[in-house]
Length: 171
Image 1 (tube, one colour):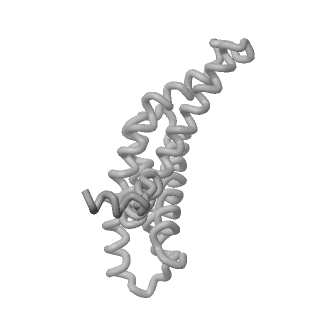
Image 2 (image 1 turned 45 degrees about the vertical axis):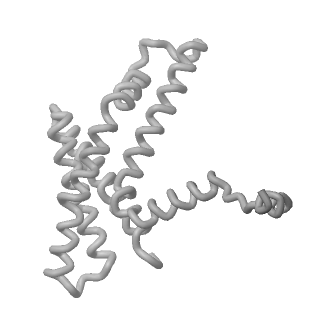
């Protein structure tokens, strides 16, 4: 009883829970960037597609967009069915193609600059993404196949660029 009476005026320091959780999550993400960074671009596309889907639905309900238009149907289809396979393919190409190719190129060509290594690794990543897109979408014309390969290269180079910028110190 005496200890309680002596501690009445003493205030205990409170640790803000939200701040401590935010700090722990930030430290975890920074420590494991190799795992999180390859998912950034497809996840951003995923949320963008859902935002565009929401806008299309709002425009349809308000009468500004007719249901017969093909654009909103394509956006809704990609938002629901397209980006999860793209995300999984991105992870697959990152861990199975780009990282091993980087190690092989660093060993085989030690005199290459960092830019040459990054472009080559991003190119391998992009070729992997393009080939997976070709297998998933089965284009009927060679122009569509070239278009899918270009999309794969852009996604590969973009993901690899963001990965290298976010995970290397001083880059």
